[in-house]
Length: 237
Image (cartoon, rainbow, N blue to C red; front, side):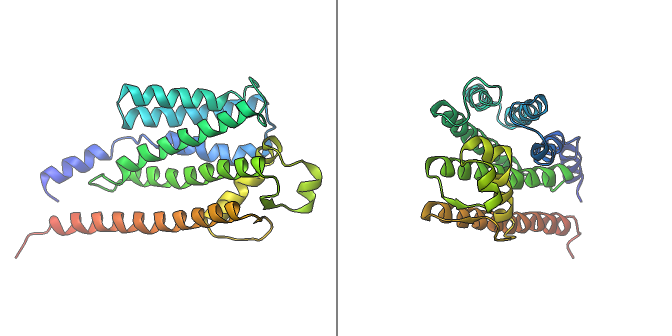
């Protein structure tokens, strides 16, 4: 590896900007099933997730306008969590839409750095992994909105249907939709929850395709970078 390449590698290998965000995201996924909507722990986890994601966007994109836009979307997304208005209501739907846009911006910000980097470091890999988790969260919100606007979009286990009506609050509280999103993204397909309408089937297939294509493109990109840097450091005979 040339001296210039070595310096670039050391620069990109500094303490990662994505580590804290990934830890908070994993904590959100693991803790949410055990916290009730509106509880202190639930509000704290949601707040930490949005702050971590907002910090990443601010780090990657220094534009003031983008920062203000993402901050406003994060604020609107948080309002139902803190009880400003009901989750399953018209303002609540606006909050979920803001959450969708916010998550999309975060994914775009991370990908703009991960897919354009010249060196594959641990921070790059962590950033790429965080996008995979964010894709599941993004589609989870889409599924919840589908079920709210068109009840019966998904076939749930009878025990879940008897325990809670199909509105946004119990869906997100019980994390059934989030579970289904990760199940679809990873193409596990247990069959306990199935899409029942054309829009639900379309988004389910789209998520599976996005998940598989993302992994394939990402691995190809990283392997290509590693091969390029390995061969460029060899002397030419």
